[in-house]
Length: 336
Ligand SMILES: NC(=O)c1ccc[n+]([C@@H]2O[C@H](COP(=O)([O-])OP(=O)(O)OC[C@H]3O[C@@H](n4cnc5c(N)ncnc54)[C@H](O)[C@@H]3O)[C@@H](O)[C@H]2O)c1
Image (cartoon, rainbow, N blue to C red):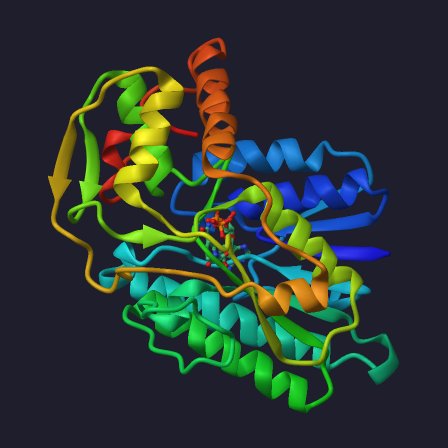
């Protein structure tokens, strides 16, 4: 199978490329590492991705360049974009509109422009943030959407575009990822910030009171769901939750993380982020039925995996764990 993975220099995309490459597929890895909020991190991952067997790496800005080669595939897994709720309230908003909405529209147009029988299936990264906060039960895919940040709005728009393309016959699938963690997690994400702070002996910067709960999902589970979606013929335009069925409170996750590290850590409370859901909670029935998938990695095991990666980074000569590029409020973390 000829697979295109966009966002291949990113956290999730690089793992997805690894998995397709290991399964023997021909992979075109696409990214524009300069579009990442941490370009140095993306460039390092990019070099690693490009060296994988069976992988050709193409630097293509989906919002600006010709996408003919990107659409010429059996399956396109579209993970490129600008993630993150926090920054989307500021300068990140225009970036999210460009790299999420415009990039997806251009990609879909390019795929729709191919002869009907040669159009790829397109698997697209969406987000639990399209739901807003979950109520007393897990969110099902047909629940009303209630985006609460510019980032979430951009993902709703991505979903609408995928729905329109599906009506025009393009086989699109939306994967709503829930709080992904594991090795190579983005430096702005909670566990990355907590792990680096704890390893430095600094207080852990926690937004809000720590009572928010999340369906934290290990990246290898996310990869398994993504590959399963790429292998299945699913109803065009369908959305599927890709999240762990059991939500965990941030304070409990911190307890597990410091337990794995064997440290006691102080917490430094920071103002809650506007639009950050109180609770995310994935109903996993559809993923089970359509993909035969459920997340199997428990949080303690998954955090141990992520922390092993932070330790490896720090052990590298020259300290890839040297001081990070300064990006928004992630100034406390080291590059990962
Ligand atoms: N990480 C999570 O917990 C999570 C949760 C829900 C949804 N998602 C979605 O999953 C996808 C991947 O997330 P991630 O955490 O791996 O993010 P990431 O920032 O690590 O990866 C995104 C990649 O997209 C690339 N990119 C951005 N704009 C581009 C453009 N115009 N052209 C080409 N490449 C471009 C970046 O350089 C980066 O390498 C995103 O769409 C994100 O919104 C992630």
